[in-house]
Amino acid sequence: MRNQRVKQPLLIFIGLLLTIVTVLNAQFGTPFNQRDDQYRLLGLKRAKAGYEVAKAEFERQQKLFADKLISEKELLDARSRFADAEVNYQQSLLAVLFEKQYVTIARAVKYQEKNGQKRVRLTLANASGSAEFRKLLNIEDDLFRSLQPDIINDIYVSLLNEENAIISRPYEAKIEQLLAGKPRTIDFALLPHLDMVTVHLVYSNGTTRSPKVLLEKDASENTVSVQSEQFSQEVELGAAAAFDLTLELFSGQSNTFKLEVVNLPAQINRYFIEPESKARLSQFKFTESSNTRRAELRVFLPDRPDSEVSIDKAISFFILVVPRSQMERVREHGNAPWTRDQIEALKIGFVPLELIPRGVGKLLVRAPRLYQIVESGDSLQMQLVVKNEGTRRLDNIEISAELPLRWRKKVQPAVISNLAISEEKTVVLTFFPPPDIAAGKYEMRIRSRSLSDNRTISGADKIFTAEIRAPSNTLGTVIVILLILGVVSGIIIFGVRLTRR
Image (cartoon, rainbow, N blue to C red; front, side, top):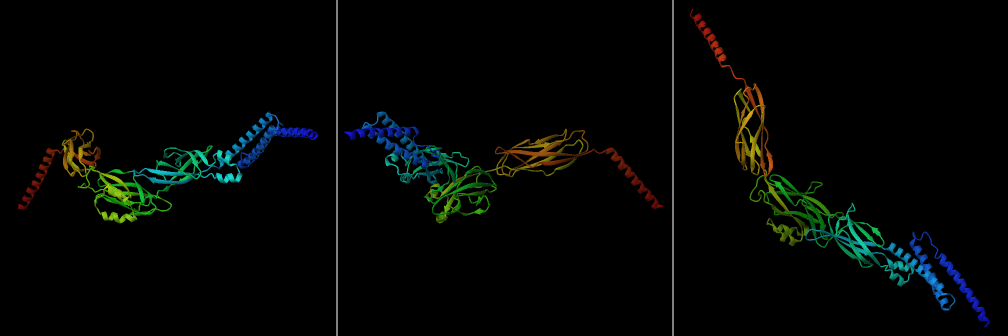
């Protein structure tokens, strides 16, 4: 009985002591270190230790309450402190987990669809390494799994160029969840044809990454993609045209290819050049550092149309990029026309192009005489021969002249309605000087102009010079001649008489 009396005050004292410690712990809690936000892993260890102390304290308070040594309020206070420590621990754990979350780019492959559209397959993986992290901290499995450390939620992905403009469709893609060990692939349509892009990633609690990625080329097919911006051109006969070419390698087998032009008439000369060096190309090779090359096709049209090269009639042809392994098959086809189906059956790179020959009129003006002398009061007349030396009909040919002051002109015919290729006609110009014109030389500029396919065509200017002389005095001239004849006759008669003496 005496021992029981001694034991009861001792238990009360111990309970009061624990209550005081608990109250002090509630007031001060787990000591805060201002570097916990900077060194989150150490902060997590501190929060974990505080959580374990609060948990042990709460379990002990439960036993004391069961033995009726503390009040219900003290138990609730212990529960509250335990809940605060648990929340603090979970927040620290989440902060470390978010910091350790990492989305890596496993692959970025550029490929081409049949319609020529360039696309990118982007594969993302969760590289957080949460399993190693859990072993390092010796964290409870249930709590660790409840926070889903192996899942990264709400990942937003977009492709950017050097100016940080979005260059993909869709503009932005979203991955709801990315699990560790289960990569996800997103397919983008690439709007411009780039070999290097910036992959912009936003995930977790606002983590942002924007690594630059050199796109791989899909090597599933042994082809080269070829494109030309100027796929259809109008070219005048006798002139040249240039088609720019962009070549991209999509091959895991070959890196040497030959450029061929098919279905182009033989009278149209052609060759390929390298734009920078201007060197002619026949075969070319891709290097490991570059899977994209540029080339240029130049074609030269004949001066005159014929049965195969007709004015305003489009000529369709193909440029083939033939791998070394299929060069012999292309040679065996010879000069026979190729169809699109035949080319597609070869599974090689090609691009269809179009050339439209255009004729242009050329106005030639010939003048047999560009200098004339007349006396004052007389008119002048000159002839011009107008000829079409071009490759298209000339319409509405007009001849005009810049005249000196008060001069007049007459052009016959005033307008030539049309002039066929190599046809020529004569135009007569009559000039009328003013009646009181002074003697001297006068120049007139003759201009010619016409239309050809709604384009203005001008001939070379001609300068016509007219020399005006004063009228001669006929009576005076007759008198002078008679005087000269009289003097001569007198000399002859006088000489005859002298000889007779």
